Each structure stands twice: as C-alpha cells, then as structure tokens.
Amino acid sequence: MSADLLFSKIVAGEIPADIVFQNKTVTAFRDINPQAPVHILIIPNKLIPTINHIEQSDEAVMGELFSVARQLAEQEGISEDGFRLIVNCNKHGGQEVYHLHMHLLGGRPLGPMLTR
Ligand code: AMP
Image (cartoon, rainbow, N blue to C red; front, top):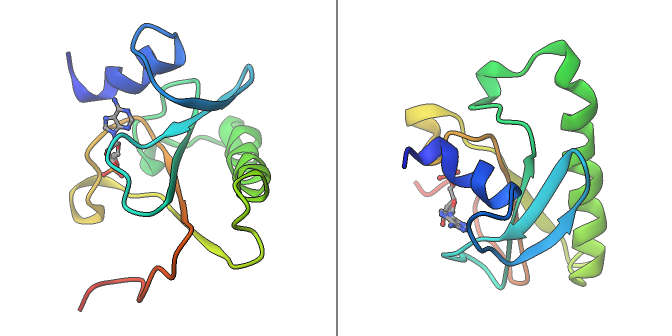
C-alpha cells in the first residue's frame, strides 16, 4: 500500500488507530511512534497530499485543523504549559506520509524548534 493511502484507510476505519476526534471533515489520532507524551496527528479526511496541494476551497478545512488542535490541546491538559504544531512538507520538510497532517506535540518542554 502506498504511504498516502495509509491515512485515508485510517479515516475510513479500515486500519486501526487510536482516534481521539472525528467529524465529517477532520480526523485526529495518536501517532504510532510518539515523540512527546502527547503526539496527535490531525488530518483532513479528504486526501490533500502536501501543503503544496492546498486550494482556496480547502481554506475552511485548514482552519478546522487549528480549531481541533486547540480543542485537543485543552482536552489533553497541555494548553496552559504550551505545545507545538508542525506540518512537514516534502523531502526537506521531512514528510513521510503524503496525506497532509498536523502534528500536535506537548506534555514536556520541546526544546529548540530545529536541531542545530
Ligand atoms: P511526517 O514525517 O510529518 O510525514 O509524519 C508521519 C507520522 O505518521 C510519523 O510521526 C509516524 O510515526 C506517523 N505514523 C505512521 N504510520 C502511522 C499509523 N499507522 N498510525 C499512526 N501514526 C502513524
């Protein structure tokens, strides 16, 4: 299976995942290889491969990713201490799965944004 289909299958419930939020446009589930105590992936249900593929008609769903992130951060109890949202794009961004996703990371100090 190609790596871009993986997240579509999670959205469809065809591959198991620890889903923490789902509505008709957005799904959020815990990362299988967490980099922090809280590590959740928030994705559009529709397959948008990378940030480069976002169209004007996707603006609402992109905004919803942030709303869901805000809501989940509160639910996970990390709003006050803070957290980080990351969206990787293509090779230099370190993107591995070509279904656009926002990482919600928190639960410990995350250090500098980039390793030097
Ligand atoms: P990125 O490098 O930004 O493309 O991030 C891909 C993320 O997807 C990584 O953090 C992986 O650990 C995560 N991942 C890959 N497969 C799964 C899966 N089946 N369920 C949950 N997270 C996954």
